[in-house]
Amino acid sequence: MGDWLRDRLPAHVDVGGMLERECFVDEAGWVVRAGDPFVPQRFVWFHRDLRDEPEVTAPVHVVHRDDRLVVVDKPAFLSSIPRGRHVVQSVVVRLRAELDLPELSPLHRLDRVTSGLLMLATTAEWRRPYQELFERRAVHKTYWALAPLRADLALPVVVRNHIRKERGEWRADVVPGAPANAETRVELESEVDGRGIYRLTPTTGRTHQLRLHLHGLGIPIVDDPLYPEVRDVEVDDFSRPLQLLAGQLTFSDPVDGTLRAFRSVRRLPLLAAS
Image (cartoon, rainbow, N blue to C red):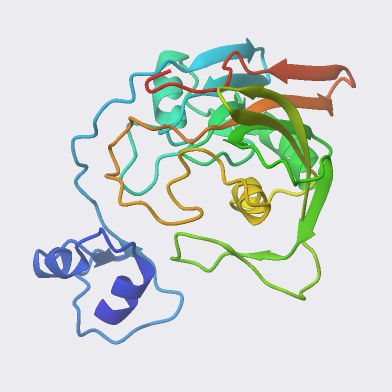
């Protein structure tokens, strides 16, 4: 069981210390020890003390709220959901309390370092119909990114390739020759201070897709901590936000059929604590 817990839990969890302190128990309440044999389908429970999390002081703008949906404009460095080392500093934990919506839950993914629009269901009742929109790719998403200019790059261009991300790895990678599972249209919209503001229209939603696609074009997104190289950045360093903005969501509402369109209040370039 000790080997399985070390493999299963993130590296920052002190599994050895928790085993010594008898923090793991099974469904009957019996202590799970490192040398116990692994038992398939066994449930293991534990309580993990939370660290003191530095506050992400940038505001979470509520763009829209009704009986079914809440749409927020999330700042960089604020997690969408509580996970790993970011629990209190997450959209779900913060807004469940602020909006008095204990069942509030996100309907799609948005990386912690990415800013912009995140859509949430107010209650479990509405989660399924709106999640199915994202599963069917019926939500039109538009992103904007700040990245270098390349005079020799012919735009607009549609990037198609196969992206793979292994569990436990920080970065994703492109698999040459594999069937395409990721597609993004890239357009240069304007220029600011010698850099380009690019409009990105993905038709798929692979992990790190936009970051990889711009990196592959030779125009990596400004202040990306992973591409082209992994930067040694402290987890609570909020000084250089990734210059990627989830700027627009458009879809036909599955409940009443109305056209829904939401736009971020943020603009590039993004500043620290903005």
